[in-house]
Length: 247
Image: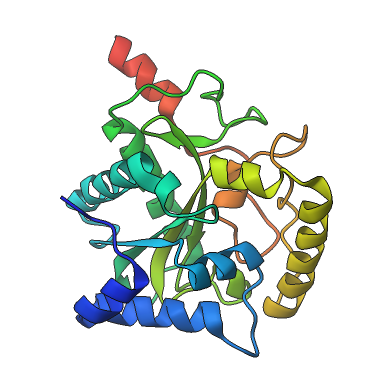
């Protein structure tokens, strides 16, 4: 069964909250005056390299299964979609009142822990399973991914704000290609930082660092707080889950 959508098919066949979500995303990616900071993301949108998925409310038990099916299908096909490809996942339920950023953070890490429970493949041998090692990256179906999250509760970081709880899941393969030319990557990152300064109402988060650096931990970038703070310990518990299974 095909769970992945192109933008064109989603705009043509979706209705209700799903249609609204894809329309809101299109507006965010194409706004002429408030330029979205991540230039490769806007290029991917224009080129049609993005794929979209729609799942239930993050609090519903079935949602983690839906997300796992989406990511499995994407993992098996993403290299066909283009060099800038990313999977955009919209969750049902928009602009919920009185839900704090920290509550969305808990929902986010719960879903990632559920995903790894549902993973049918072994964790790649070259990726540490401990998120407190600097080469750790979330993996699913044998593929390493950068896991971006945006929520309706973010107000200072427009770059992490969206009317729906949303994930953008980018293969490490895409980021490796982006960094293959150091000079190009450096210039692009400078432009991204300039856009970010203009786009957000707050300075760039101090945890936005480069993968593999000694003081970088990818999990801290996945879900950014709406201020400069960060969790001291990663809520991802794969290592503990494996220990429990062996008992």
